[in-house]
Length: 204
Length: 86
Image (tube, rainbow over all chains, first blue to last red; front, side, top):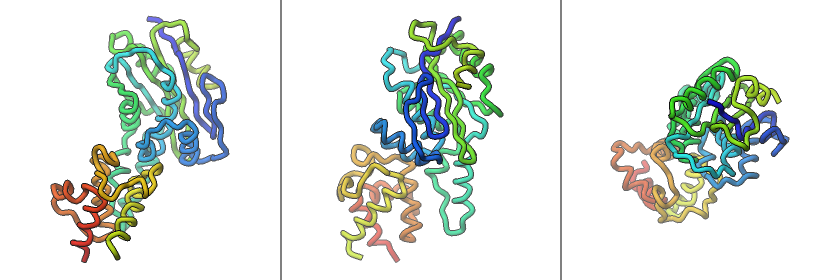
């Protein structure tokens, strides 16, 4: 089955690129102020954004770029998400542990709920009413071969008509999102969905 | 502390504790529902409000069912604090 990438978004080092073109930039080097500045510039009008942990904010804004002008009719249960990263939710895990360790602090339920990377997928799914297959994988580096094979199998098994895939990673003040939209072969593609072309987009 | 002063303090604490960054204290009506159609808080926010009561006012909500009455609005929350603060 031939699949197409119809849009992609990269966010790192204070810059947002959509389909390889710079879309937004900021002087903020830390993820939290940067991604909030980007949110305020975009004005998605989704106040729950501020309650999310930082990696969810990153994944949320990256996928906003993919879906903000998306107007094709896709059944919610055929819209899938497959994401990956190297450090899971390590920063949030540490933040939660800090609230556990402090003697006069009560562990925060609001931080605790974000100590799983799947929660990022949940936030994106709630935002866009996506009810299809979802998976979050932990790999040392972005493994385009693994992810593309997994996404391909979802399409071949008739479980998916559209899929968000990619890499959303955050640790030690380094952050990076690379997400792309995969659809069945169509005319408005920016690349073919295969290992080689995904890597080209990722390394751009 | 007067009740109105407590209400204003609670609004600031709710905004900070629940990360409601795009909300101003003046956006929260004293009798506006905190959950559902009002401020739109959810079940995790309810847990955070329980933490807030314990941390800031030393009040433990022993019975979770009590929460339904306590967290109706900022006014009911203030009334609960006034009645239970040691």
